[in-house]
Each structure stands twice: as C-alpha cells, then as structure tokens.
Length: 411
Image 1 (cartoon, rainbow, N blue to C red):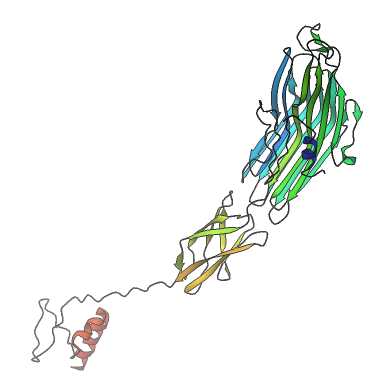
Image 2: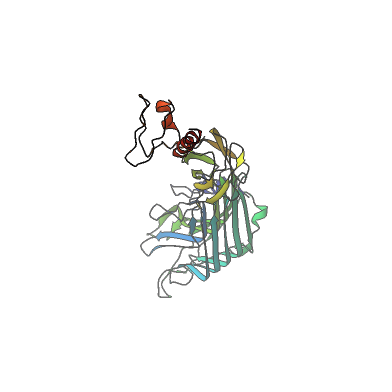
C-alpha cells in the first residue's frame, strides 16, 4: 500500500533542509538520515535482500544533549545461487542508557533470503517492538512483516502486514491510511538528559512529530516491501521565555525501518558462446554453452534433435550438454528456459574422415621386359606383374599372393 510517493509526501513536511527520502530504483530503497550520520542499510543490494530492523538517531539540543546511535538486525544480501537467514531474540536497537531518552527494543527480528536462476525472494518480521524517545512513549507494535518474490517471466510480488500499532499510545490502523500517518506531541517539562535522575530539562517548547509510511512496489524488474518506515522530527523553542531562549528548527532526528524486503527478477535467458563450435555427426561431443538465465528445466536441441543436458551452473551463466547425432552441416542450437523463453547459436556437424592405408609390398615388383624370370633373394618366385605395371601397387598383399597362386596353377 502507499506506493513510492508515501514517504516522499511525508518527507515534504520536513523544512530547513532536513531530509528523509525514500529512493526506489531497480528495487532499491535507501532512507537517508541526518547529514552527520551514515545512511541506514539499503534494501535492494544483491538479488534478494532484507533489513529486519534498523534505527538511526542523531539529536543535539543546546549544550546539554548530544546523542548519536545506529544499529541494525537481519540485514541480508545474496546473489544467484545463494541463500541466508537470521533470527535474533530480545533485540535492543537503541539504548541511550538514560531512562526514557532513547530506547528501541523488539521481542524478535527474523529474516530470510534466497536467489536461484528461477526466482529470488526475501522475507522479514519484527515482533513486539516499542520505542521511547525524549521522554515520550512514541511507538508500540505487535507485528510487522514484509515479503517479496520475483520469478522469471512474471512481475515481482510484494506483501506486508502490521498489527497492534500505537503512536503516542493511540491505536493506528495503517490499512485505512494509504497516505501514511502523521502525529505530533510536545515534549515534557522535566525530561531526564543525564545519568543523574535530577539532571532534567524543560523541553515543553519543542514538538516531536512522527511520520509513518509503508511501501509496496512491484514491476518486471523486481519488488520491494517495507512494513513500517518511521521518521521522527523535532521543532520549536528551547528555554522559551528566558534569556537563553533559542529556536530549534525542524530537524529529522531519527529514522527507523521495521521489516523490509526486496528482490530482483533473475536475468532473462541469453546466449553468448558455444564451445566447441563443431563436432562429429556421430554425436557424443560435450558442449559448453555460456550466457545468462539458465534455469532448472532448461532444454537444448541441435537442429531439432534433443540433447542431454548434463549440468547447469548454479549461477545460471553456463551449462554443459551432450550433442546428439545429426547429419553433416550447420545446425541451430536452441536453448529453451523453464519459462519457455528461447535463444539460439550455430553449431557445425562434420562427417568423420575414413583413412586410406597405403600398400607396403614385401618384395619390390619389377616390370618384365624380356620375359626372363629371375629368382628373388628370398628364393621364392617373383610375383608376375601381368603387364599391370604400377597399378599393382594399389592392391593389397593378400590380393597379390592370390593372383600369383592362380597363375601358377594355370601354368
């Protein structure tokens, strides 16, 4: 719910240069915090990613309070062929060490991600979370969960759920608030800002504003889901009515993400090369095809004749197959993914060469010119040439001996 504009609309309320932007591009989410702090973890790194729970605080009031802290749980990123999961119980994301100043806890934070050539997916959940900040009970939450799935050939899908949400102790149903939720409340007149319980300050001239949004964004490239994105800003006057009075401009002092997930749709099928590029018409050649988007169930055929797919690399960038027998000539090798997408390359079948063995006669043959028979050095009669001359050399030794035997019987 809410789409990409929810937090953009919320952030437009922040003045004096303070920012909180939700940037969604290629299923990438970044919530930027105060300029002096590092950004929150990114939802969108890798093929699948999660931010279970993340918090960032940077607040300065007068010369009596400077507090900065950030932490995150369930931050996972994986590429194709990988998977990961994490689960943490009794989590503390913020703890200023001073009662009521800054405390963010959760009963549990869990995340899981996976990515294969066929699909990528991510899910995260946060249970029993509460936030106290600058002396106020700001947020309570029973459950926040987000999930995404991105399959080849389909648009990404995103879901989210929240329950038991309260802001300043008031129940809030985000399902009925597609534009998000905004509420404010003045700070107390005796807020503890130091270790000593007596170290208190009157902050009643400052308002604390809470902005809450959700995000579900899907498309052909992927999906992103944020169950709860929270931004906290302060504005007002410090030491109002005294000689030390000073203005507190509108300033973002905290950003929270509870249950974020994103995935990218695996790369479509494409082919780049086939090795070797030729083989025997008898088949049996092991061929490697490189490219992208090779998934479980991918098939290969050579000129319409199915090949045996031996293995597909887990990254989906190469496969090996055994070429079938085929007539000589160029053929189209077609690779078809499990989603029915096809691509092709050329392969050449070559007929095997049949070797011709030359004749190596035991005894040299001398053409007869006088009709006189001469004994060879072995004591055997020479093989008559019958006037065949050099053509006899093309016969095998067995044929020559058989011919000689016939001639002898006739003589």
